Length: 400
Image (tube, rainbow, N blue to C red):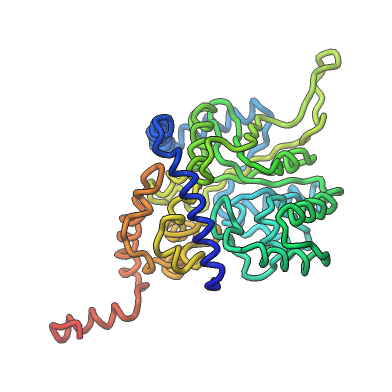
């Protein structure tokens, strides 16, 4: 990342810190933290049971579900669904899971136009190159108003002023125009309620509502998103919002429990009133079954990277795909392999533990990283300078 981008990112992170500091120590938030830690602990320990219960609930709710062992499995399922609907343009909402499977690149190679509906993600998409996000909920937090103005003008061939509302309205108009003929929407999920078979998504812009109103709504979510009940799912997304944005609640919470339907004519069930005629949930494993359990506690708030000294120094080169910082490095071992984990910044981490101190569910990322270094060294992935020191100690009784 450029020095100017790092500076803008740090300013954005300071804003988040100030907002969240005012409410995250409140009695209600402290109670919520304790509750969500219990929910995530129980959910991970009982994932198989909750998974099976969720499948039965989806059947009851007429939600089609597919199980994807790998990212390639997920992409194949998506390809088949898009072919079924003759899709050439797809409306996409923000999703770290879709970034994990490299959906946009995959569909671009098939000449399918993926239109980001989240403003930050759309700005990065218009940027075309060097456009990796820097925060789970604020992907373009490293770009200042001047950068964004240039990106929008060059990409859309317009002449907007460096004024936030004008930029927003210009991008919104372009997105809605491009989506006029789109019949498929795709998103991730913030939490899944096993008992009710409900999928919870949070957003401020209203864009997920647009995505979910297409004829086919595809949802891709990791198996770690499953929690016991809808009340538990709402607790998780509330805590995520507090630590991600510094607000008690987002503008919108979408709870999807099936396709659009009505029974207002002689109580006969009709699908596709206004929303999707078909909802397909793809439950993705992609290494999660083998992952260190604590890695799966993450609720996606990004508070770890906001406080991480390494991330604030080097930016999004510390992490893997859309999974940023130390937790992203840890997950890359299970999603990909040891080499990817090493290249994602395994030895960048200082092991200071600030991520854990500022994580609402207390993921011990520094301890996980330290253990992974031992495993990585065993299979030959470690800094070469360390190898020189090791050999010198062995051969010369001195590191020098």
